[in-house]
Amino acid sequence: MENQYSTPEPENVNPKTKGSAFPFNKTIDKLLSKIDNGIFFKTLIVLMFRLLAFVFLLGGLFFSVYSIFGQSGYFCGPFCGLDGLILKITAVLGFIIGLFVSIGAIYFIFMVIMKRAKQLKDKEYNGLLEYLYKHTIPTCIIISGEVVSSILFTIGILGLFAALLGSLVYFPLGGVLSPFLNDIGVAYSGGYITLEGDWDYIGIFSGIYLSLIMMSLYYLIAAYVAKEVYQYACKLVIIFINFLPKLAIPLAIRKRNE
Image (tube, helix red, strand yellow):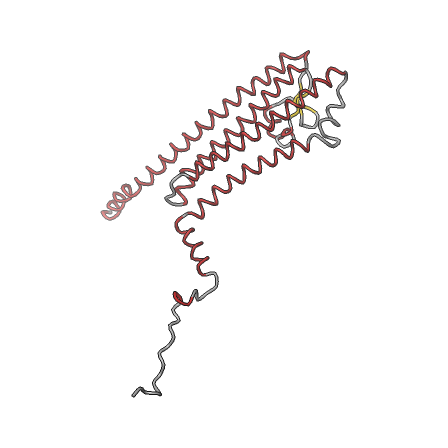
Protein backbone atom coordinates (compact mmCIF):
# COMPACT_ATOMS: atom_id res chain seq x y z
CA MET A 1 0.00 0.00 0.00
CA GLU A 2 1.39 3.38 -1.00
CA ASN A 3 2.25 5.89 1.68
CA GLN A 4 -0.33 8.65 1.30
CA TYR A 5 1.75 10.96 3.42
CA SER A 6 5.01 10.59 1.47
CA THR A 7 6.73 13.79 0.39
CA PRO A 8 6.27 14.47 -3.35
CA GLU A 9 9.40 14.73 -5.48
CA PRO A 10 10.41 18.32 -6.27
CA GLU A 11 9.62 19.61 -9.72
CA ASN A 12 12.57 19.87 -12.07
CA VAL A 13 13.28 23.58 -12.43
CA ASN A 14 16.51 23.25 -14.37
CA PRO A 15 16.96 26.43 -16.45
CA LYS A 16 17.82 24.29 -19.46
CA THR A 17 14.35 22.80 -19.44
CA LYS A 18 12.35 25.69 -18.01
CA GLY A 19 14.08 28.48 -19.89
CA SER A 20 16.58 31.11 -18.89
CA ALA A 21 16.75 32.09 -15.24
CA PHE A 22 17.44 35.74 -16.20
CA PRO A 23 16.00 37.90 -19.00
CA PHE A 24 18.22 38.45 -22.07
CA ASN A 25 20.60 35.74 -20.82
CA LYS A 26 21.06 34.21 -24.27
CA THR A 27 21.53 37.61 -25.87
CA ILE A 28 24.22 38.55 -23.37
CA ASP A 29 25.92 35.18 -23.81
CA LYS A 30 26.03 35.66 -27.59
CA LEU A 31 27.39 39.18 -27.22
CA LEU A 32 30.10 38.09 -24.79
CA SER A 33 31.07 35.18 -27.01
CA LYS A 34 31.46 37.55 -29.97
CA ILE A 35 33.59 39.87 -27.85
CA ASP A 36 35.74 36.97 -26.65
CA ASN A 37 36.38 35.54 -30.12
CA GLY A 38 36.93 39.00 -31.62
CA ILE A 39 33.99 39.06 -34.03
CA PHE A 40 32.57 42.12 -32.26
CA PHE A 41 35.75 44.20 -32.60
CA LYS A 42 36.40 43.07 -36.16
CA THR A 43 32.84 43.90 -37.21
CA LEU A 44 33.04 47.28 -35.49
CA ILE A 45 36.30 48.25 -37.22
CA VAL A 46 35.04 47.19 -40.65
CA LEU A 47 31.76 49.01 -40.00
CA MET A 48 33.66 52.24 -39.30
CA PHE A 49 35.34 52.07 -42.69
CA ARG A 50 32.03 51.37 -44.42
CA LEU A 51 30.39 54.28 -42.61
CA LEU A 52 33.28 56.49 -43.75
CA ALA A 53 32.64 55.41 -47.33
CA PHE A 54 28.92 56.22 -47.13
CA VAL A 55 29.59 59.56 -45.40
CA PHE A 56 31.92 60.52 -48.25
CA LEU A 57 29.41 59.33 -50.88
CA LEU A 58 26.33 60.99 -49.42
CA GLY A 59 28.23 64.10 -48.32
CA GLY A 60 29.81 64.47 -51.75
CA LEU A 61 26.48 64.12 -53.53
CA PHE A 62 24.90 66.60 -51.12
CA PHE A 63 27.55 69.26 -51.75
CA SER A 64 27.38 68.57 -55.50
CA VAL A 65 23.75 69.67 -55.47
CA TYR A 66 23.94 72.23 -52.65
CA SER A 67 26.79 74.19 -54.25
CA ILE A 68 24.72 74.83 -57.38
CA PHE A 69 22.10 77.00 -55.70
CA GLY A 70 22.02 79.92 -53.30
CA GLN A 71 23.85 83.23 -53.29
CA SER A 72 27.20 81.49 -53.02
CA GLY A 73 26.26 78.80 -55.53
CA TYR A 74 27.85 78.35 -58.91
CA PHE A 75 25.33 80.26 -61.02
CA CYS A 76 24.52 83.00 -58.50
CA GLY A 77 28.10 83.49 -57.42
CA PRO A 78 31.13 83.09 -59.70
CA PHE A 79 29.06 82.63 -62.86
CA CYS A 80 27.44 86.07 -62.49
CA GLY A 81 30.86 87.68 -62.24
CA LEU A 82 31.87 86.62 -65.74
CA ASP A 83 31.93 89.24 -68.48
CA GLY A 84 31.02 88.27 -72.02
CA LEU A 85 28.79 85.69 -73.62
CA ILE A 86 31.64 83.36 -74.61
CA LEU A 87 32.93 83.09 -71.05
CA LYS A 88 29.44 82.29 -69.77
CA ILE A 89 28.91 79.63 -72.45
CA THR A 90 32.23 77.98 -71.59
CA ALA A 91 31.35 78.27 -67.88
CA VAL A 92 28.10 76.36 -68.50
CA LEU A 93 30.12 73.71 -70.29
CA GLY A 94 32.56 73.74 -67.37
CA PHE A 95 29.68 73.22 -64.98
CA ILE A 96 28.46 70.14 -66.84
CA ILE A 97 31.96 68.67 -67.07
CA GLY A 98 32.73 69.45 -63.44
CA LEU A 99 29.49 67.99 -62.13
CA PHE A 100 29.83 64.65 -63.93
CA VAL A 101 33.56 64.28 -63.25
CA SER A 102 33.10 65.17 -59.56
CA ILE A 103 30.26 62.67 -59.09
CA GLY A 104 32.35 60.03 -60.84
CA ALA A 105 35.30 60.77 -58.53
CA ILE A 106 33.06 60.64 -55.45
CA TYR A 107 31.70 57.25 -56.46
CA PHE A 108 35.19 55.98 -57.29
CA ILE A 109 36.51 56.96 -53.83
CA PHE A 110 33.43 55.36 -52.24
CA MET A 111 34.15 52.09 -54.04
CA VAL A 112 37.84 52.23 -53.08
CA ILE A 113 37.03 52.55 -49.37
CA MET A 114 34.39 49.81 -49.58
CA LYS A 115 36.86 47.50 -51.34
CA ARG A 116 39.50 48.10 -48.66
CA ALA A 117 36.90 47.46 -45.96
CA LYS A 118 36.03 44.12 -47.55
CA GLN A 119 39.71 43.19 -47.74
CA LEU A 120 40.09 44.11 -44.07
CA LYS A 121 37.10 41.94 -43.19
CA ASP A 122 38.71 38.96 -44.93
CA LYS A 123 41.88 39.29 -42.84
CA GLU A 124 42.47 36.67 -40.17
CA TYR A 125 41.74 37.77 -36.61
CA ASN A 126 44.23 36.55 -33.99
CA GLY A 127 43.68 39.20 -31.35
CA LEU A 128 42.67 42.85 -31.22
CA LEU A 129 46.19 44.26 -30.90
CA GLU A 130 47.49 42.23 -33.82
CA TYR A 131 44.45 43.07 -35.94
CA LEU A 132 44.99 46.78 -35.30
CA TYR A 133 48.71 47.08 -35.93
CA LYS A 134 49.01 44.38 -38.59
CA HIS A 135 45.91 45.02 -40.69
CA THR A 136 43.92 48.11 -39.67
CA ILE A 137 46.68 50.74 -39.57
CA PRO A 138 48.17 49.67 -42.95
CA THR A 139 44.67 49.83 -44.43
CA CYS A 140 44.26 53.37 -43.07
CA ILE A 141 47.58 54.39 -44.65
CA ILE A 142 46.61 52.99 -48.05
CA ILE A 143 43.11 54.49 -47.97
CA SER A 144 44.51 57.91 -47.07
CA GLY A 145 46.95 57.80 -49.96
CA GLU A 146 44.36 56.58 -52.45
CA VAL A 147 41.76 59.18 -51.42
CA VAL A 148 44.21 62.10 -51.52
CA SER A 149 45.62 60.86 -54.82
CA SER A 150 42.13 60.58 -56.34
CA ILE A 151 41.17 64.08 -55.20
CA LEU A 152 44.35 65.65 -56.57
CA PHE A 153 43.96 63.78 -59.85
CA THR A 154 40.36 65.01 -60.15
CA ILE A 155 41.42 68.61 -59.47
CA GLY A 156 44.18 68.31 -62.04
CA ILE A 157 41.85 66.97 -64.75
CA LEU A 158 39.15 69.55 -64.07
CA GLY A 159 41.79 72.28 -63.92
CA LEU A 160 43.05 71.34 -67.37
CA PHE A 161 39.48 71.66 -68.68
CA ALA A 162 39.30 75.08 -67.02
CA ALA A 163 42.57 76.13 -68.65
CA LEU A 164 41.40 74.94 -72.07
CA LEU A 165 37.99 76.60 -71.72
CA GLY A 166 39.55 79.79 -70.40
CA SER A 167 36.74 80.08 -67.88
CA LEU A 168 35.38 78.31 -64.80
CA VAL A 169 34.84 74.62 -64.06
CA TYR A 170 32.53 73.44 -61.31
CA PHE A 171 34.23 71.67 -58.39
CA PRO A 172 31.64 71.12 -55.61
CA LEU A 173 34.08 69.59 -53.13
CA GLY A 174 36.25 72.70 -53.11
CA GLY A 175 34.49 74.27 -50.15
CA VAL A 176 34.87 71.20 -47.95
CA LEU A 177 38.47 70.62 -49.00
CA SER A 178 39.49 74.30 -48.96
CA PRO A 179 42.01 74.00 -46.05
CA PHE A 180 43.77 71.14 -47.81
CA LEU A 181 43.63 72.84 -51.20
CA ASN A 182 45.06 76.08 -49.79
CA ASP A 183 48.04 74.17 -48.43
CA ILE A 184 48.93 72.83 -51.88
CA GLY A 185 48.28 76.15 -53.64
CA VAL A 186 45.39 75.29 -55.94
CA ALA A 187 44.22 78.30 -57.96
CA TYR A 188 40.47 78.58 -57.67
CA SER A 189 37.80 81.20 -57.07
CA GLY A 190 34.12 81.82 -56.51
CA GLY A 191 33.77 80.65 -52.93
CA TYR A 192 35.99 77.59 -53.44
CA ILE A 193 33.54 75.75 -55.68
CA THR A 194 35.23 76.46 -59.00
CA LEU A 195 38.56 75.97 -60.70
CA GLU A 196 39.59 78.84 -62.90
CA GLY A 197 41.39 79.21 -66.18
CA ASP A 198 42.41 82.03 -68.46
CA TRP A 199 43.43 81.90 -72.11
CA ASP A 200 45.95 84.69 -71.53
CA TYR A 201 47.73 82.55 -68.92
CA ILE A 202 46.96 79.11 -70.29
CA GLY A 203 50.57 78.00 -69.92
CA ILE A 204 50.74 78.92 -66.22
CA PHE A 205 47.39 77.34 -65.36
CA SER A 206 48.15 74.19 -67.37
CA GLY A 207 51.47 73.83 -65.57
CA ILE A 208 49.79 74.14 -62.16
CA TYR A 209 47.15 71.53 -62.91
CA LEU A 210 49.61 69.15 -64.55
CA SER A 211 51.75 69.38 -61.42
CA LEU A 212 48.70 68.35 -59.38
CA ILE A 213 48.27 65.25 -61.55
CA MET A 214 51.92 64.39 -60.97
CA MET A 215 51.48 65.12 -57.26
CA SER A 216 48.60 62.63 -57.14
CA LEU A 217 50.98 59.89 -58.31
CA TYR A 218 53.50 61.03 -55.70
CA TYR A 219 50.96 60.72 -52.88
CA LEU A 220 49.91 57.26 -54.07
CA ILE A 221 53.51 56.03 -54.17
CA ALA A 222 54.26 57.72 -50.83
CA ALA A 223 51.34 55.90 -49.20
CA TYR A 224 52.62 52.48 -50.27
CA VAL A 225 56.15 53.38 -49.19
CA ALA A 226 54.82 54.57 -45.82
CA LYS A 227 52.94 51.28 -45.43
CA GLU A 228 56.08 49.23 -46.04
CA VAL A 229 58.13 51.42 -43.70
CA TYR A 230 55.50 50.99 -41.00
CA GLN A 231 55.43 47.23 -41.45
CA TYR A 232 59.23 47.06 -41.33
CA ALA A 233 59.24 49.15 -38.13
CA CYS A 234 56.69 46.75 -36.59
CA LYS A 235 58.96 43.81 -37.41
CA LEU A 236 61.89 45.55 -35.71
CA VAL A 237 59.78 46.18 -32.60
CA ILE A 238 58.70 42.52 -32.51
CA ILE A 239 62.31 41.35 -32.85
CA PHE A 240 63.35 43.65 -30.02
CA ILE A 241 60.53 42.41 -27.77
CA ASN A 242 61.48 38.79 -28.47
CA PHE A 243 65.10 39.61 -27.65
CA LEU A 244 64.30 41.11 -24.24
CA PRO A 245 64.08 37.76 -22.38
CA LYS A 246 67.46 36.72 -23.78
CA LEU A 247 68.91 40.03 -22.63
CA ALA A 248 67.32 39.74 -19.20
CA ILE A 249 68.94 36.37 -18.35
CA PRO A 250 72.60 37.57 -18.59
CA LEU A 251 71.70 40.67 -16.58
CA ALA A 252 70.09 38.54 -13.87
CA ILE A 253 73.16 36.26 -13.70
CA ARG A 254 75.46 39.28 -13.46
CA LYS A 255 73.48 40.78 -10.58
CA ARG A 256 73.50 37.42 -8.77
CA ASN A 257 77.27 37.15 -9.11
CA GLU A 258 77.67 40.63 -7.71
